[in-house]
Length: 555
Ligand code: ATP
Ligand code: MG
Image (tube, rainbow, N blue to C red; front, side, top):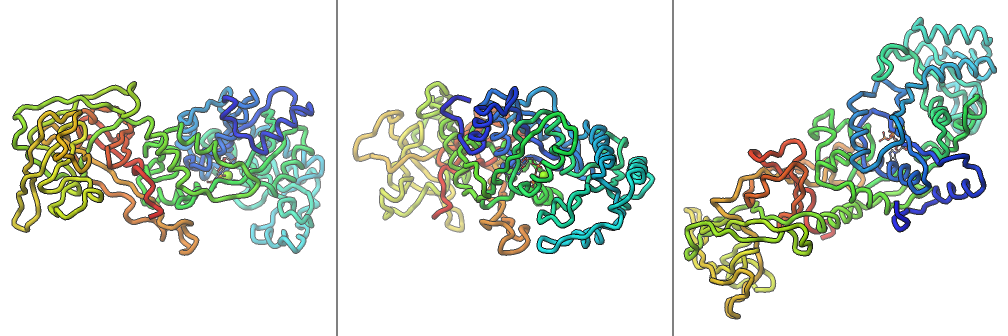
């Protein structure tokens, strides 16, 4: 990361202080620790940029570690998707991928260690009883009747748990800390649960699985993580995190730091809720272009550069905040305006027949980008019959030239990259609707102005009727209508926008259908569109609306 793009924040300040004070022995090591129970979303992107970014900034390392301690909800599909998304964002973890599950033997040994130290016990309280015993924030908990089991009994019970002698839920292993602690996390938290589940990495080897708390800090310690960065909800877990690293013979002493989660209005950053949208088929999958997942945004046509630049611009704070989606959209437009080729596509075609145009195709040349010559040129076929957008024509001659910079009967307009034309007449159907415009072109007006009296009202886009290609356009809108989905309705599903996808056929200039998947164009005057990552082909061209040309939400 170059000096100018470094995002200074309170965590980078802490790291710098640790280095200056000689508290970091060797490299700075961070990690990104997703649980493979869903696809990564925009919130994760922030965490990825932060963790990988800090490692880069300090010449350190960043591990990718799957926090796979809960097999019931995890899947290899998620493991694969997460790896792909991180690499697509442009980051590479250090060395091999790590898995919490590869430390399960070590965790088990450490559980035995705690029992032997008198710091853990097997508890048979049923979940409801256990929660009653735990008390609540203002009411101290009371000791479980199983708290004083002997070391031998605990060792033998844990062994039986491991061997599958008990049913799920029959008992758990708990740490013996402080049932009166004002911090609920310290009231004898659970270390191991019985779960007769097959695991995507360890198969059927285990039927007991460690809790998040009993795993996370120890994973960090094993990997020599120096700065373990997580979101604020783990702040209250920090004393427990430290209790484990102090009471276990761990190989290093990582420290945990918390920052605020990224929330964005009109969207949702919870894997659980995103999974519900997938499961209930409200979207077509995790990578549906409406999803705030990394793979969804990728399919929508957002670039990795734009996403990173959005994340790098966010404050890293000690409070949770809500970011305006317009901030993300600003980055997307900025990037696409600079980097996407221009093309023409007519969404609502109205035929224009140009009486004085030659019968053969005239091949014009058009720049792919108005400012970036390096993006080259393309050939644009001009023919006697063209389509313009129906909304670009009016029979109302009283419309002012200032307000309606399009084609009006009896007046002139410029066809983008081609001639100035004049609308001479219209053909209507039985309902009186205009179905065709009869027009004439002004000769020698390609790249040249016509005489003053023929000054065009404006510039409109067009496509040749005979040379244009039919394309499918998927017009996406916000997935949620409410700024805070679920806040007013109690059920965020009630805030789902029923019109978040509209599929139409449109006519595009011919060359663009040959593009590869994931190519973004600016369809002039319409918006940014990307060829679909999975379904676009030359024979069945499919483009997704990435974003409109400008922010119209505030109107
Ligand atoms: P979710 O609630 O969506 O399931 P999670 O926190 O359970 O998210 P993990 O897979 O555990 O998801 O997250 C991996 C890392 O990403 C964690 O360090 C977590 O703190 C961070 N992270 C998750 N969501 C956000 C967010 N909205 N903003 C910033 N960081 C996040
Ligand atoms: Mg989590």
